[in-house]
Image (tube, each protein chain N blue to C red):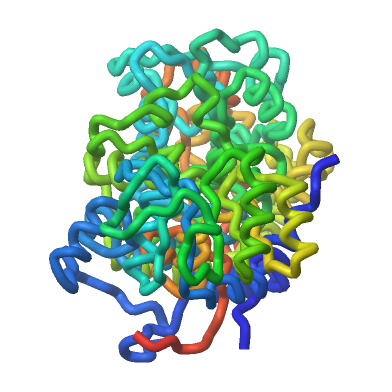
Length: 432
Length: 159
């Protein structure tokens, strides 16, 4: 009559994707996750209310800070990543901003991959520079570049498991070692791989951030984001007084000393989420948690389809380059074997030999691919990064992110691969 | 050299230790912001009979504070330790002398000697775990804040 052992996890990934965080509702017996569409929660008595606000007891107060439906999503994601817990946010960018706001102070330095999603680059370069955070962008493929960029005030290293849209695969173990030598955490955006294909904590990463809007939800319905913390970074190493010292924003609490493994998560939730207000809605959390139930199945099919499409494009005369890291000829093949043995995701770029003009004509000719600014949907998607997602970047920054004027980004969905190939084929045929 | 702690973190052992009701908290701080205070408060709230042990204090939570385990009238079932690892062996010896059933060493309170003393006395030892977190994981509401409880069960619990 015992619950399953936490130390010897006997349950596989697919089982946990369905069951982690999901408890039959104790009040009603509802088996599906109830949507607790409420702003606030009635206290049992004044002492309970005080205990919740003082963080002496785990309890619900106000949905800007915690909500049972959101918590089910958070626990499920944290379980799959192998983290101590997670805190959900209204979007991936909000989650990412929350991590930086929590661990950084003005004058701190962050090293980031130069091959990041354009929105992330913009957030770092403009919002965080405005908050006096110093930044270095480095070629993510070169561990020596990461090492060379380390300074005495470096407080975080940041990269994507699979770069958007260049498809760079990060040598997580190497970069984590460099971060830890400097006493800093490695933060990984695992949006493109998801825990189904790569779990960065197993290779030394300390924090994982997500845009759950993509494969996690999986159907293009809901924005959401999350921070997952592994829980064993030493925030009391003397470099993070903002986490280790008495917090003026929570009546003098020392988050790391008091909550140990859960210190950063508690601070993220009870200070940063409380103060930024970028809470995930219960309805979105419901849809995102439901999405995770089929994540392992979907990722398998996304990867299979992406392989077929990428291989076809690689042979096409109108195509000058396909940057799918899952191709046998990819410069990242060895890293894919190590970090993404079950597949390198389903988002990649290819270059049209005809450049910018060919790109515009090609997109207009597609029938099945949706032209929009998102990825990780059941539906196949297409975009021209230079004129959309990455348009705020200069040509030099575009080149550093591996994007040319004729680069097309595809997010391969769950349709029949033959139909996707036929659609791409007819659109490419119109270019000759 | 480092001891494999996993036997001392086994869920069956943890659940068995949590069945104890009378708990001495050794190194309990009167400071409301210290981890030991959070834990003591939580245990009282969840019906444990908490006995503070701290030679520097007279009373914490309105309960008499004892200088050591042997001074506690009637003894305790579980000894929860918030002290530096070097302080553990004599505490383990006393725990055995007063007939405690379980010795719980909080995060980073890792003493191979203390563990050996308690085990040879037949005491159930839990190491490098927080009693508040483990109670909340199996019996409480740790999940309401998005923590990974690792508990998976399709059984309906009572509200």
